[in-house]
Length: 141
Image (cartoon, rainbow, N blue to C red; front, side, top):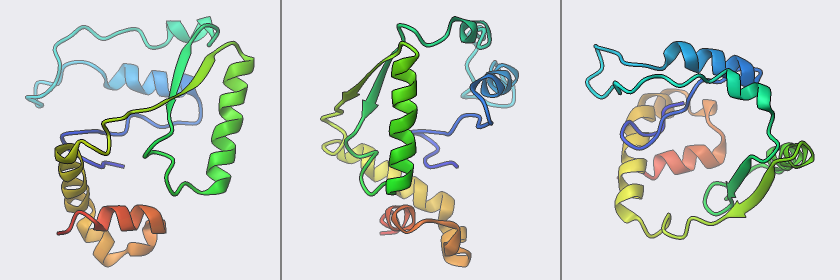
């Protein structure tokens, strides 16, 4: 789901990490039709998967991203973090102290998010959860 053209974009989603790696491998690389496309060589996204997560450091930004999250989603997320710990990853909370202070970031984010979703918010608001809908609507003014 696109949230902001200039600040973020969701990557490939699939049932497994391996499937995501295959998708990203196919999508990555230069696109002559996209002036913002990178000309950097494409990494191998599949080979590192064979190494497992042992020694991987995972930072979990709790502020902002977990505000208003559904309890069931939070429980599933925490279970997945515990699984990663058991597999040898180092999982720890991190704080992004400047996120709420970055007014220009937030203004761009909410304005672009509302512009992208405006038609669906107006015609099919039931597609959005209450929290997501309210956050998106904050960009209309």
